[in-house]
Image (cartoon, rainbow over all chains, first blue to last red; front, side, top):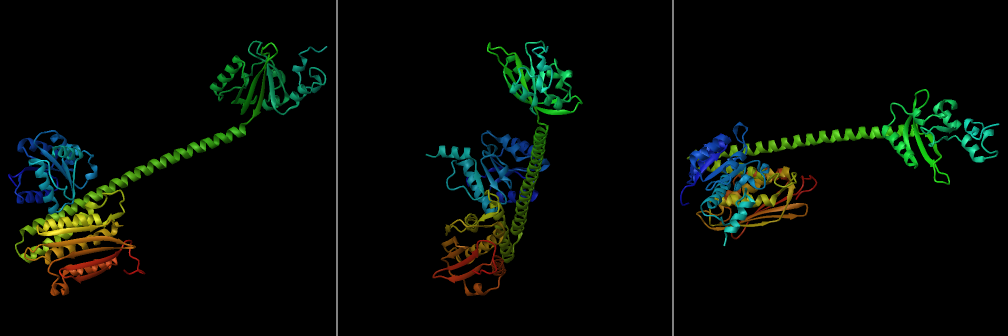
Length: 149
Length: 373
């Protein structure tokens, strides 16, 4: 890894949030902020300037990760990825997010997904197959395909 | 001397115009109610009425002769039907229509009216001829059928709506439960993973790591469930692909090549957890014991249908399973034995040169006690 990725984690289950934070830090990334609601997440996007935002779909106070993805949409330099047990609720184009990682995921799955996302952020297009338990949005797949020689 | 129009003023058969006119006699005698009106006179009055009409309506002849037929109409008469009759009279064309009329005593009846112009040689319409038939029974029966049909249709629509709502509620509930199960599995895995990281004792840590892979294997089962439209079947091959890749990757052993030979085998969802746990034990065992000291090697996982059964084969080209491991009554081996019993599966360990192969044969459907693999 060249330089740690600046990551914002948006997750309302404290235990899962804690595990993801620990895993990201062990993998050498930098968790620049965490949020449990959509409003908190949107505020931290401005304050923490993350490169990657990992977003749970259902958030505390009844808010939705979709609001967070929509706030990030079309903003240069920020990649969004959902982490959810409810991937079916997402539209085909995933509200502009790059990927969805299905819960429950093992640490191995999350590590593989992060490695893939790191390439999406730093050195697109990613090469190799999409890891298990992860789906890339069709528009991102098309964008990556257009980048390949 | 009788006037030439006198025949119209009586129902007596012997006063018909022209002695021996069988048609006039027939019109008087028929049980079909009939009238004749004269559109050349003001308000198109009745100029002839037969006895059947009088019987049907309850009026006396002198009460209705010279009157327009509208006295038959009442509160329930359809204004649209009346307008259609008026248009036909004005246009000088015939019309057949069912209309609600009223007898003299006020009782309503459904009148199957047939009205037609009588045209003379000059092309004029000196008369309108109308026949009437009391079709109250038929119309009432038809209306009852229509009402019952409308009632049943409304009932079916209500039941369909209720069922749709019930289905939507059930579907929402299933999704909610599915979501909670996945989230809870994620939390259990998070707790185990974090606790494992805090353990320094190697054997305790290894046991916790093994437990974590079991929970994660169950998590993979749930992640794969409901991904297809068939919520009752589980594809063992697709699961084996995810699990094998995850376990080999998670082992951090770059020198181990994974070979997958997977054919679709769908089993009832109830079999998914025990199949998943068994495959997890066997693949994890191979990764743990077959390739010590960073020894490179090949691990192959096969899933193949075999008639009413299916086969899972886990083979490695490692050092072979040491006799003490084969004979050890470890928790893992007991777990495999218990899962085989639940699945009615047979299992055979075989030493290769080099390596170990484990062959499992399982019934695809719910185990039948009369069949043993």
